[in-house]
Length: 236
Image (cartoon, rainbow, N blue to C red; front, side):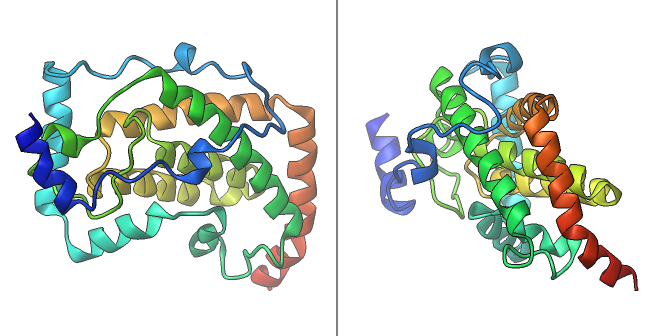
């Protein structure tokens, strides 16, 4: 096994440490420890060697074989995704400078989802796809955290749902972007499809908990008021 993995560590620039956001101490705002229990939300990932796990791995292989330079560029873009990249859906006016109240809401939501992500990652020790098949060549950084669930998928779907609470008319486009951003991690070669689905399932539970919080709903209304002048200008 060591002989198989050694070239991987050289060719993929060595397993990188986890992103700082995945290691930082929890910071809670709308939610708190125990509000969302990942164990109650997430099914166990496919066991290594199972038919489901082999199918998962084959999906990553085929995605890598078919990926284009545009696919690679997208995977690398969403690797460092952030909420205001949704300007491609909402418009160039969607910036932190124009919308400081919205920026603060998204910061709080992101802190909450990151704290829950750390709990979820700690429940499962699923190796990333290139550790199961050294022939895979990730086009993004290969980090050392568990593959399941996908943090990028989790954040993509939470952000999309939160933004759709502020901009309900754009819900379909926002969710379409979330699906594409999440799949970018499979294109990148560092997640299985079931990791992406796990992230989406956890996102759904987080969003339901957020929407049940009066403080969150009040902040959404404040964000809607903040965005209203820009939406009027867009409609003019």
